[in-house]
Each structure stands twice: as C-alpha cells, then as structure tokens.
Image (cartoon, rainbow, N blue to C red; front, side, top):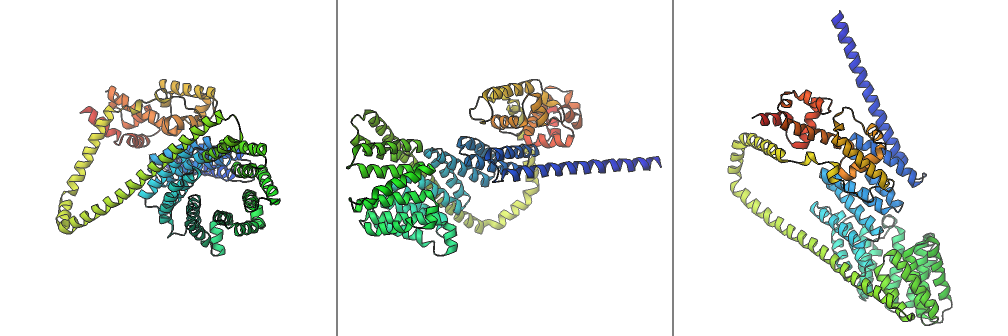
Length: 593
C-alpha cells in the first residue's frame, strides 16, 4: 500500500509540474503576442511601438524560435524606417540578414537585401543601395523567383534614372520587363514601362517615350487594375505624358492635359503630385507664351505647396522652374532660386540636380570659384558611380546567362549518360549503399573529430572580437557599452557561465544593466542570442577540459553535463553535437584511443 501511495503521489507531482510548465509557456506566449499586437497599433507613437517590439524580440531570442526573431526584426526595421532612423534600420537589417545566412534561409536573405537597398536609398547612399538590389536580383535569379527579379531591376533602374544614367536605366528596366510582363504584378510592370518612357524622353526618343507611356497607362484598363497599379501612379504617368507632348512642341495639348490633372479631386488630395502638376503647368504655359501672367502665380503656388509638406524633391523641381522663369527677367531672383535648388539638392543628395543648379549659378554669379570646384567633383563622382553601377549589373547579368547556358549543357549530358547506363548505375548503388553509408558516416565523424582538435572557435571570447562598433544602438551610450563588454569579459574569464539556470534578466542585473542592452551587445559582437552565447562557452569549456583532463573523461556524460552548467545529459549532448557535429561520447572515445 505504501509503495502504491508513493507511485500515486509521484505521478501527481509530475502532472502538476507539467501543467505548471504548460501554463507558464502559454503565459509567455500570450505576453509575446500582446507585445507584437501593441507594436502594430497605429494609434500609438512609434517610439512606444518600438519599446513593445523590443520586448517582443527579447522574448523571441530567449525562446530561440527563428520565426519569432524573423518577425520581430522585420517589424522593428520597418518601424525604424517609418521613423526615418535609417542608420538604425540598417543595423537591425544586418541582424536579420546574418540570421538568414546562418539558417540558409533564402527567403529572408532576399527580404533583408531589399531592406538594405531601401534604407540606403532613403539615406541617399544610392551606389550602396544599387549594390544591394543587385545582390537581391542575383539571389532571386538563382531561386528562379521572377517577381523578385523584376522588382529588383525596377529599383536598380530607378536609381540609375535618379543619377542621370538614362541609357543604363533603360537597359535595366527593359530586362526587368522580361521578368514581369507575363505576371500579375501590374504595379511594378507599369513602373518599369514608366522608367523606360522617361529615359527615352530624356534621350529625345519621343516615339518610344510615348509608346512606353501608353503601355503604362494601358495596364489600368479597369477599376481592379487601376487599384492594383494605384491611382497616384496613374496620375504620374499622365503628368509624364504631358511632358512628352511638350518636348515634341505640342504645348497646347500638354497644357490641356495638365489643367485636367490640376482640377482632379484625387490629385488635389495628394499635395506632392498636386504641387508637381502646378509647377509643370506654370512652366509650360510660360514656355508656350512668355507673356502669360498666370505662369508666375502657378510656379509660386507650386513652390508654396512643396514647402508646406517639406518635400525636398519637389522643392528642387519648383525652384529650378522658377530659376528658368526669372533667368532673363530678374537675375537676382533667378540666382536666389538657383541657390535654393542647390541647397535642397545637397540635402537630397541629388547629384544631377546639384550639377544643373550650379550650371545656372555660374551664369548668374560673379565669383564662382568654390562652386566650380564642387561642380567638377560632383561631375566626376557621378560618372564614376554610373560606370560602377553598369559594371556591377553587367557582371551579374553575364554570370546569370553563363550559368543558364552551363545548366542547359549539363542537363543534356546528364540525360545522355542516364539513357546509356541507368541500369548499371542502379545496381551499383543498391549493392554498395549500405556499406558506403556506414563508411561515410565514420569518415565524417573522424574528420570532425580531427577538425575539433585543431579548432579554436570555442576559445573565441568577447575580448578577441570586441572592437568597438559605432551605432550598436541609438539607446546605448558608449560608456554603457564599454561597461557591458568589460563585464562580459570578466564573466568569461571567471567562468561564470558554468553556473546552472542562468537567465538573461538575472545576468544583465548582475552586470548592472538590462537584458535588452545585453541582448543587443551579444547579438552585435558575437552574432548570437544570449542563450546560444552561454551554451557555446560551456561547450568550449567541456572540449578543453576533456582534452586536458584524463580524470574528467572518466565521468559519466550526465556528470560532465552538470559540471559545465547543463541540467541534463540530453541537452548537453544535443548542444555538443550542434557545435561540433559529433556526440560527446564519440569525442571521449576517440580521445581515449
């Protein structure tokens, strides 16, 4: 009876522990879900939403669930970008990319590369942005993702257009069309047609400019396709159509189209596009009739609207139009607007606009020695960037074509070989499969064991890799960072990681910091989560001690696991295998031989 009673009590205890653990896990999951929902709440200020996503990420790293970490980093980078904190967005995109590389996750590698391209572009680092979009195109081509390939080429062509490389932009966009023309991605296909149209207009190929503009507009044939492309883009295409007509000398038709757009209710709600149309309308009316009294009003109104929304790109456009308008009428006003164009172009990092503004300043200002130096520097820089971008894409394009041709040849050779000898190959494979697999496994384990004896990665510490990295987080001061690095080095030197049941919160508290800062520092300097960092240190210690201490090798796996900080032999064996590719029992056996 006593024995039976003991069994019942023990069973109840186990059930209670399991239920408690399940309840705790569910509460933890509910907490993470709540943090994530709050970070998505548009009604909250972005800094508050960032605090919630930081809390979510903290829990995600502790749970070691890649899907949660991916979601957290994706959303955090989006919030940082929304808050115009592009440098910080780039830092966390790097964490996203590194995780995707580690897990060999091509989908998130592509997402990270797109984010790199976007945030560098928003940071006016167009050459770097082009490089990342090109890397994404390369990866999309390998994975045969035609949609992503076309979208990457759209972004690359847009950058080339912004840099005044209309020939390169047109070539890239035409390649992009090949990927998207047979897909349902109407918005990006229309965007590619639009870029080709603009490039042709700038190169005075007006027939081609008109043809591609009509292709872009023609995609919006019904309400569904218009909603897909977005009405804002349709209005931009119509504005471009007016500029093409004007370039061909059809001013009256262009003006009629712009007046229709100017009175469009939808366009008036979009101040950026409304101001663009006002500026273009005022400029074309003046070009068509130099005595038009309404032109100046329209130009100044367009500038005022751009000033209200503080859209730098629009301010550049409006100021350059006013520079041209006043150039022969009032040189002092023309110089004022030319200099305003120049200043805004510098803010935007728009090299093409800088050169255009300086061209007018040279004609309107007496002493331009400093501006001449800048003009020369920008001109050469622009040429170098455009040439480099072309070379980058040319290499990628060539490699992809070469790879495609090579694959076709290999496929034909493989088919020929298979047709000739498939029966012999099948018999040989069946006869040696069992023996071969066993031998192969033994060789792999042996090779890993030898590599492990020469391996120094488990000895790699914060001290060796902790070169101060600026921009770890805008919320961590340099003093706090240096303090954490010092504490981590002491933690390693004193082998604090051998203690059991270490958690991020208590560890950070012992360092006089918080777990969020600790997580960011370890992520940045070791490219690991906190738990992975501690486990790797423990495994490294176990490897060293097993090699140097013959008595330690006599211990059971369970005893070794507890000595190095693990709660069970199973967890220890699993982590050991993950780090080394072999099990601790095999490692000890080979050391004893």
